[in-house]
Image (cartoon, rainbow, N blue to C red; front, top):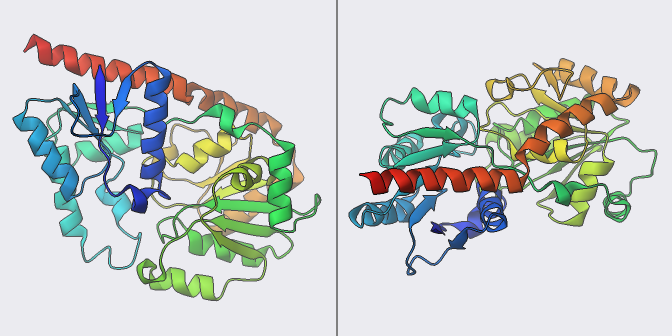
Length: 337
């Protein structure tokens, strides 16, 4: 079996969840002996798309003409497009058509959660099977490492006794960055660090104003990869991820793999997690503040242990094996026809 992982807009998507998911797929498939290429001029048995823009749709039609099976990864939904970047509400019709073009022409759709599958089923134009498969996580990358923790602490001038809460994501309103900043304002003795970037032109008015007026205990270093952020995941006191809409939220998997206590908004995508078992769930800024204080004043090892056990079922080796099985099933059905 040879699979083409279709590449489109990878430079722009490098810092996004879709970009990370693409890299995870490549690694997971190679772990399971699947031959993977990104060279569309080569011969391949199946094509897997992660994006929905013009280049992807054009190649999808090419694959259909050649009778090559098409898998489309539904990372994006109508719901998570809204309230993201500036002008998103004005181009939603254009984006929704892009989703329809790809999703209605797939032979099989993969989406990362039961919640996102439920959204797709409501669209009314999807006729192919929809499989739920987590984006997965490489557990080995998120093991505790004192040198990485030291790099994180040194980079932000944090003493070993300083309390730190982190958030990760593009500077989208949907991600709840403005709430993250307001919660930090309520807790001046805690350092809040948000990792992520977005050009100022694409930031909404709400996000621009929140950043301009942020208190001194909020640090926004932009996009940081490698040892510093890995050290942040194992050295910080909590992840606060107040996103209003997600299809999975890879950052939550990263925190679970790092044994970092997690606070999320009480939204549908996290219905598979139980409050106070794997994560803590809040509904508003006052509740988020109280949950941070709870973490800072209590032993959270039982919760982080449960979270790690949960995410261990989403290790890349396991995800790659399941993805390989999905491909094989699709190819076998095609041969039967």
